[in-house]
Amino acid sequence: MSGAYSGWLIGAALLLALISLITAIRNRPMGLVLLAGLALIEVALLVQAGLAVARLSEVKQETATFIGYLAGTVVIPPAAVWWGKAERTRWGPGVIAVAGFTVAVMTGRLLQLWNGTA
Image (cartoon, rainbow, N blue to C red; front, top):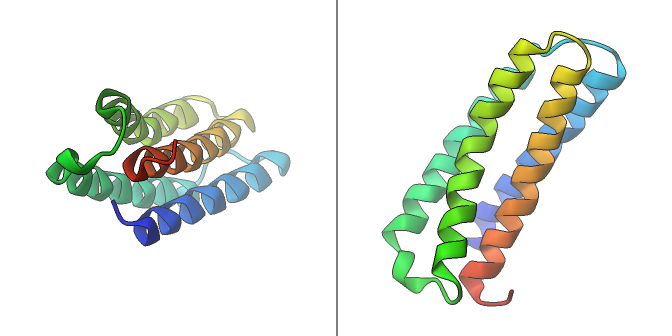
């Protein structure tokens, strides 16, 4: 796993969380910008998962935990889209804000497990 790629992914997820939080504070439903952001994050997560699985033997610690975090991060954006579309109040973007923050934290944890610094 590349630290630069993971850093970009963490930054993008936090930016999505911030935009979602602002949308929730403004009492607006989920719009096209948040959907596009979630799609971009999902594609980036799938690329990261593919790269990580290809080099899975290089994981320094707790391979099962690493795989669990990797699978969890890939599932979060589609779940946020589903929940955000179902909830047409301010809480839809609120869910997306939590999802963005969660992806950022879990990606940071993946990087720790990969480098063996956890």
